[in-house]
Image (tube, rainbow, N blue to C red; front, side):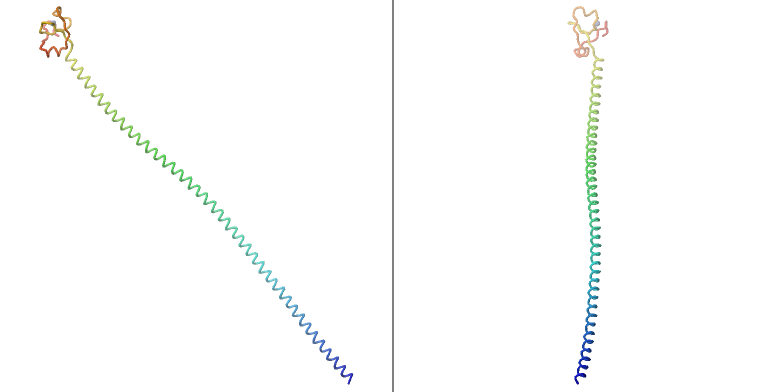
Length: 188
Ligand SMILES: [Zn+2]
């Protein structure tokens, strides 16, 4: 009884041991599985993190490229603004030149007009003075100095012998106007 009891106890213990061994193995397996899971998980996470990092760096690069484009465009814009400013100042200068030229043109036209009118009036004056000269010379050609005596009713040229007693110079027209007639001897 004692031996069979011991045998059965040993058998029972063996069974327990093998059952415990199986449990241990199962736990080890589970542990391994968990370790794998952890590893895989962390690797996947690492991969995700890598991808995120890569995407972040891509985005950074993209942002950098956008910033570069913005910088380039900004500098192009300021270049264009400078050109616009230059063109505006050129335009203003040209407008000033046009204004100056039209003012000069107007002034030249005014001068020309005033010169023309001066010339016209000069011509008129010259014409008038010519007329005056002509009328003076014509009156001179009609009239010249003659001589009358204190008593006679004739007028004489300067060398006439009738002028021995008196000799008064007078304009021929005036002499005629006063009723004098030409001397028949000297025929003035
Ligand atoms: Zn006479």
